[in-house]
Length: 300
Image 1 (tube, rainbow, N blue to C red):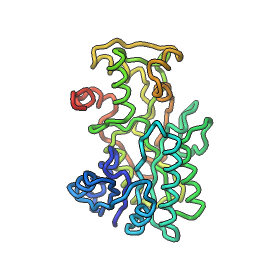
Image 2: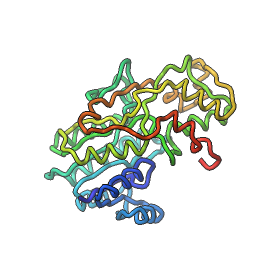
Image 3: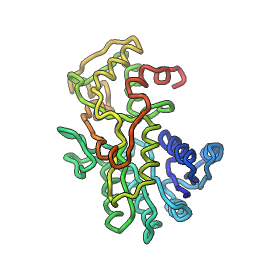
Image 4: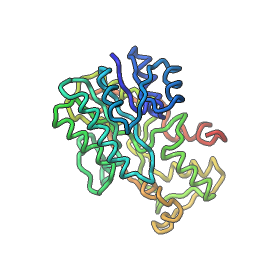
């Protein structure tokens, strides 16, 4: 089976590509630069030139393959709403190429969309607050209504591990370094779910291998929720800086645009996913990763 993968040279994408190759799949990875082409070829994959704004390249990649995994997203937070709309359009373009087939199409969303009181599960579909990223979930439902054989994998807010450079944890550490204090909002009892990127990669492969009901949601969640105060305390210890509690008003100045994520409370379950796919995370937890060398190395 040949799998077309967008975001194939990204943090999660590289792990997914390696997982697929190790299991005997052929991989066709979307590559927007010569550097990406080189990375894919060195990994043992085939490169497909194009990017997320080139819908014809996306369609041809999908037509050339037996399945599609969409991991790519333009991380331009200055144009976040625009990029979320683009993601919906990307899903629609790939869906056009898959129309009339039963080729599996896995797309990527996040559990953080469904932050609420209680625990978010795979059955949650609507959000109780406006969030641009819901465009991805809406686009998924539109494609399912057209008969596209699509499932959604919702990643945890923290996908961690070696190579993590733009995720929640490195951003949280960066702010602590800049401010000279590791901070939480109020008591820091809010929660971040987490998953190691290698466990997440295995989930994508398992979801590809087992037939699913169209529109199924899977949760790439190894830990239902780590209290942010525990993350902040570990960062304070590793950086030898104070641990502080901020009021919501102080937090806006301290965290700036990251405030939304610093106050996120998103306990999420993956019980249905684990049962359906026989998925059992085995790689280090978030706090175990924080105690290791990677996140605090000079070259991180």
